[in-house]
Length: 466
Ligand code: HEM
Image 1 (tube, rainbow, N blue to C red):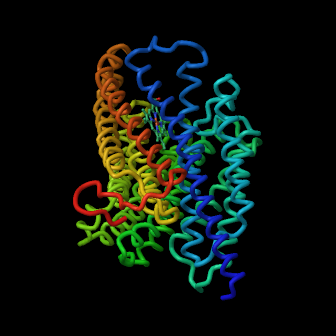
Image 2 (cartoon, helix red, strand yellow):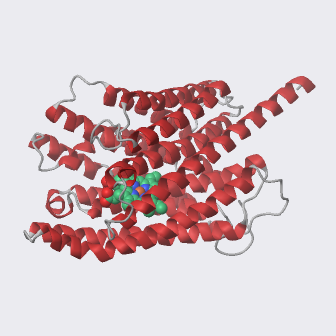
Image 3 (tube, protein in one colour):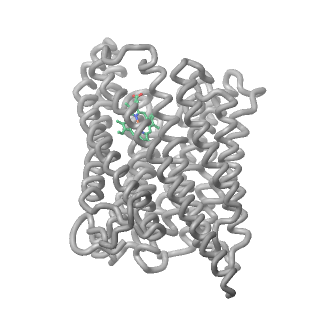
């Protein structure tokens, strides 16, 4: 290699690190903002008169929280990791960095304008996770397309013949989400039941084909890398990929059981929800078997405990989703707080923990700046205990709420039954938010702060490895 080409490669790799850092910083800002709003919302349940200005009303703040966590935080955090993974696993520097920077701008314009318009009461109606008005959503779709161009360009220019399994999932996420974004935007069949069917398709696949694919893809890179051993089975990874593609797109209608949607369509969604056990067993089995015998290394790592909890919640949250889809249980749990517990088991316990694990595992390798070990340990335990309290409290509170409704008790009786559990959720939420402040401090250390030579200590015991 000549001196000039070596310098070019070095500059290009430095560009990858800048991008990874910028995506992570941006995602962290949105995590803090959107979960501060989530925390405020959680206090409004037991104390409904708290913060009663229209700009702080539940109806405006709820979509600000959900869209902010989805599109400002999780999408940006996982895209930053995905770009880094695509480049490293392709053996080259990221292709099309200008597209990648353009994507980051578009994600941020969408999240900022989305937050402002929602707070002013300007929205797309009550279509969950697509409450942003069309021109705001267009920025988000633009960001997905620009990210896809950069990532697909990187994989197309790879040095190896085979496409590593991570990139199957990552490219799958961008391709499917582009289709999803366009389907959600086309207006002419979105009337009456057509709109309900599209809504089910959109809301479940935003979780299933976007966040789940990105989290699985990045785990397939970060886990073997941090454990320093190959993935247990490549074939299980491929099985998970295709079975996710077969079962996921149809299951959205399980959100609308007992609605006027055709009964056979609802039944199909339930059957495919049971089918989802195949990719979930394939994915979690593959990850846990890769970890088998590596517990000492996991205990000594700052990043791997986050990935371990993420994998456990992937299994628990997905299994819960399958069970929840059965009609007999929907009669109790439909529209109760139980569902919100399930959303946080999956979006927080699984997706957010995987994003943190990948960032703690890969960002210090890129920037050569370590997080603070005490802050990382506190982050891990507060977030783990906080989300577990959140999920358990709403599972019990939501079930009591549903039983009261099924018995035909006065509505206020269900509020009284759930109220203590809503307080417990606010306590769990406070712990989660404090954990986010510690994560933000660590992101500062891993990016802006002056380089420190000391290695980070592990979360659980012994000497740190990653
Ligand atoms: C401090 C942490 C958090 C707190 C306190 C919190 C709190 C809340 C509250 C109070 C709601 C409204 C629930 C309702 O309408 O009954 C909610 C909804 C939701 N949040 Fe969070 N949240 C947090 C973090 C997150 C994160 C990080 C994500 C995703 C990455 C997330 C995703 C969601 C989703 C998807 C919903 C809609 C749930 C549904 O309707 O099923 N939240 N959250």
